[in-house]
Image (cartoon, rainbow, N blue to C red):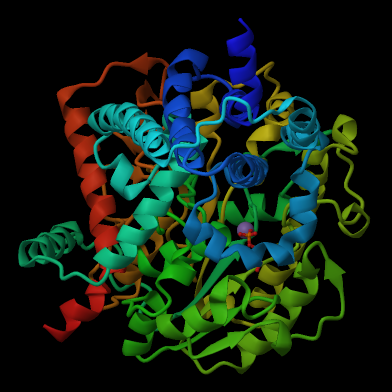
Length: 617
Ligand code: GP9
Ligand code: MN
């Protein structure tokens, strides 16, 4: 008994580390998302990941070991807290490419501080008590001093840790092929393997990604991709070239989620101007956002390239040196002038670098606007849109102009400046504030459309408008469900709400109505290419006026196909009409493989700058 006591007091630092880090990992796993979680199945991989760290500590002498484990605990805790907060906003966990983009968060500081919760700091409580306990109880009586024994213990523990972990990794890769190499669904990896293993894997993939970028791509892979592009380009001719010679005005609206369209609060329409505009346009009401960690920039990226976002981090940073067959470039090839407009810091999301690569002749950023009124994150939509009209008027026709609004940005707390819009029982709530902000933006868009008409621009232009991504994050789900008059939302109901409106207004309004095809941001460029007869054909999306069957692929490997929704985070299928879970069929299984192939093609293109290579061949 005495011996055991001595042993415990000698290795109290190790024991505390194992217990506390395992416990914190489990709590973190639980907090990451409710449902689909089991303590017992997660403990096993977590334990293995912790044992690997412990094995290294045991080579050190007693004092250094205690210090090493304390630092490991500290770093892991920082990861837990940051991952959790990142998850609240982006519904994803942090990866190294995201950290490289990290300074971006500086500008959205107000957003970040509003999602941090006081309870997050409970993860760090043990860091205060560990030194006290160790000072009081730690002895060195049973310390192993022989170098050989230490190396032996280290090797045995490390091997055990690695064997157990390999076993876990192996099963996950059998269950979800390509998941571990592409990391397309990082939350699922964390939920299955624990946070520490996820970060081990992230580090490994980051290193191997940078090595593999330098390795050549096989000829057959290149041929596969080119064949895919050929087969994917539409050959029907509905509306082909109808917009040739007209201007294109594309407006990407910040956080415009679909549920506000045609919807009322306290008897008043939330977006009266868009509701009117929809009646004069082709309105896509089953249009999903497909962004990943790159937020707004991913939406821009897909719209202008019809390539999927990066699996980790933002393509705007990772691949800013690549060559693209972007929409502005295609327009330029057809003799158009091109410009991007956004009243915020030019370097944000690396726009100043990327827009040039896309072929925009001009980028009117913050410095090109008179910052005379602030609403939300920066220049008000009102002032932005007004000043943009002046700039549009000065552009040589025909032109492609790409506008990005800003005022309705999370956390929607600039209520004093959104104007008076009564949100009834939602007054003072997160959702209520969002409704106010989007009502404000809607009003500005209404005025913008009126001016386009007054100034005679509308009759010569196709106007496309869509939302960049969701407005209501998962932690405010309850408010959204209350707004929709439901007591709660099932997972599939929540996913079906992840839509943004998309509308195309034609100069003569000859094509208009509600279009229910399942579609997404990847489909904008091919649709424009058909309307404007652009020459480029390397799209991963589809032309919405020449596709009978809608399907949507999401960055995490989820997809919508034939009225079924495959949810990769849960590895389950749902019938979209009944919301019931269904079993995998052969055709769905085939589709799932197809989806992963397409995502891989897109990744290969980006990683190896293939569009440049295709051109030079
Ligand atoms: C700022 C804006 C914000 O320029 O586009 O990006 P987001 O935080 O929504 O990704
Ligand atoms: Mn955005």
